[in-house]
Amino acid sequence: MPHPIDHEFVRSAARAADRLAAPLAADPDEEPTGVPHRGLAHRVKTLVAAYRSPDSALHGSKQAVAAAMTQLRALRAVQTPSGLFAGGDNVQSPPDSAFTVNDVCDAYVLAADAGPELGEVTAALAEIAGAATESLLTGGVHTPNHRWELCAALARLHRSFPDDRLLDRVEEWLGEGVDIDAEGLYSERSAVYASIVTNPALLLLAEVLGRTDLPAAVERNLAATLDLIRPDGTVETVHSRRQDQKLSFALWPYLPHYRLLAIRTGRGDFARAARLAAADGIEDPDLLAQTLLTPELCRTLPAPDAEQLPRHRYLPTTRLAAHASATAHTVVYGGSDVPEHRRIRSGLACNPTFLRMFAGAAVLDAVRLSRVFFDLGPFRAAAMERLDDHRYRLTQTLTTAYYQPLPKDRRRDDGAYRLVDEGRFSAAMAFPDRPQDEVSHTTRIEVDLRDDGADLRIDVSGPTVPWALELTFRPGGEPQGAVPLGDGSWCLTTEPLTYRVGDDEIRIEATVETGEPLAGPDRGDVLRYDPGQDYTVAGGTDATTGNRVYLGGHGPQTLNLALRAHRHVPVV
Image 1 (cartoon, helix red, strand yellow):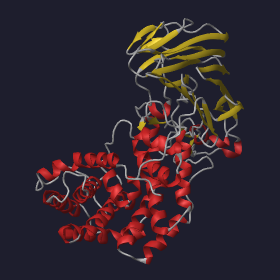
Image 2: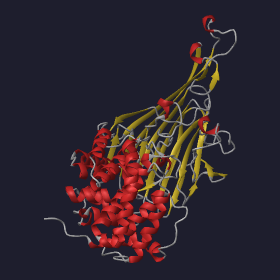
Image 3: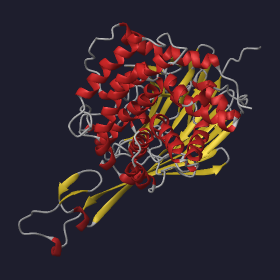
């Protein structure tokens, strides 16, 4: 038997939609100013959903219809002769316009089903969709997720305005294969794009095309994401190749997908994730439209599985390990793209954070290591080895060179040699043609993940150069046992450090195994984070914010670091 309706979920979705739609309906003739095309389409979809839903305060409201028409006129005004929409940094962008057309097509289905009372809205939506069709049919993309967003728009257009050319184009894109790896992560490794673009697009395509392999891909992605959910209700993003690699991303955008697949499959672990995603309330105004378009979402969830602790997961395709217990949740990461590509670039995983730890309210957001070695930037592991169940070794060797005179047969009388990037800088010196004297520097970090934290052994070898370990704590506490340096930073030597927030704390103790003693608080030249010249040459940085604790010295050096979480768990 099907699950009964979860009326509280539907009412919550309606309230979220009303928070967006009600102010628009209150003044339906007010012309929108400064609203991008995607925002306009989203408003229309939400207004139509609110009109259709018996749980909305705007059910059957003529004010909602009038407001939808106002937004539609503004949307049609920013549709260019090509059918694509003006606005944004991607000029004449088929995929950016596809986001808008997806909402337009969903709104069309909702409006057309309502009958004559929404006839004017339905006609305006059909006009906008028709004007965009040819450009979306022939247009290209420039990111992996764009393919699936564009395919979803083509499939939605076909759903309401059948045209075999649209399906042929979808099959052409899908013929490339969905970019999901063996662990269930999409190639961009991004929580933002998985939850907002790829998963919903694949589910829609499965519905329109009858493709059972596409929901299976979404299920694999959601299963992989389970072990990336952090105790603060966010999803781990350090490994992402997109903008969210520097951000904290909430779980709630995953709610409809965990909910739908939990209902369809009976998976209790997905039901638990869906409940977590809604734990702080439902704020997404789009959910109401989704419940009307996919009524299965309204069913009650199956019984959720209890959280299994402790648990450990290693994702070798992205080189990320997560260990969770009742005391600590620790993430170790060694999957940066920078060592291979030797550049900082949009679309690469560049975040140099290699460890995070959560101990309730006490959070160590980032552990990073800088070296002053030819300004090549902080430690980013080129390799991550799993030594045993909970132990890992991260390694990076940096190599640069001094260049000898050109051989006689490579010299030019005019001195005009090729401008070449040698990995550190560019010059008109034909670097590949010259003999080289290489200089190398190796950093190895071994991490032993424990139920109460982690043990680190950091080995810095090679020439004598300054290095600094940066520990960035989330604001809310203050490091005890470290020396204040000013500007929200502290110096840790061999005295233990305690970072306490409420009854939760993280304790850190450092001991030097080999090499000179740690640098004191007077060594500001050592105790700092250096983002490397890829950032500084453009006046930028990827530095963290928060309460930053530094320890450092001059290599070669071997340091042991014990990180321990302590939490006060109330007796029930």
